[in-house]
Amino acid sequence: ASIGIIVVAAGRGERAGASVEGPKQYRRIGGRPVIAHTLEKFLSWERSGPIIAVIHPDDQELFENVRLSLRKGDTVHAVTGGATRQQSVLAGLRALSELQASHVMIHDAVRPFLDDALLNRVATLLDSGESGVLPVMPVTDTLKRGSADKHVVETVSRAGLFAAQTPQAFALPLILDAHERAAADGRSDFTDDASIAEWAGIPVLLAEGSPDNVKLTVKRDIAMADARLSSALP
Ligand code: C5P
Image (cartoon, rainbow, N blue to C red; front, side, top):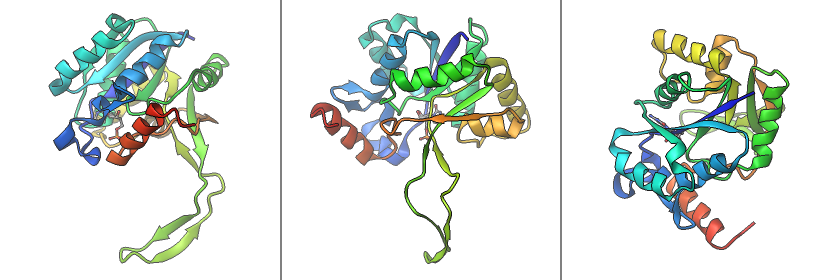
């Protein structure tokens, strides 16, 4: 499989206080913007094909500075994203379909702690012919359904439940077609690509995710990530 990479980074990140401090993918952890860490991982992974970063039109200057700081930054393509994550991914898929790749890994810029072992696990499953691969972690908390007035309604069994991570990997023509059909159907609210695959009937295999591969969503996540890198916490 030749694997193109799409890193989506066009969100505004309001939940992380973007209005004051700028979008979270450009905030610094360990002295570098979050997205620089993420792109470096793909630039150094031996199996990466073309790499596309999907960015917000307002972030062009921020992104240019990141690109200049990367070792092989001139090889990263940049395209403009859309109003939802789904639309941003579609922009990336359309750009990738003009380049050389049979498969694609779609990754959130705000997950900078992925590693080669995770990438290799996912790639090996693509090599063996899977049409879709989703890295997941088993849910460990006890799950409750709550009522509108914040009382416990019931305890939900966590057996067979998983939290979805990225990179999510697919045969490129299949996921591009699914995305195009979802958009044509007026859908724009899928929060990950495995749910579009599910909607389109593409089989998706669960793969072992990584506990380190967390998504930096709220302000505190950025502070924790920075502390972790700065003090080399485990
Ligand atoms: O908002 P959420 O946390 O789901 O964002 C996940 C990833 O999708 C982030 O890296 C974000 O930058 C990206 N995104 C995007 N375009 C949007 C919304 C989110 O590329 N319109």
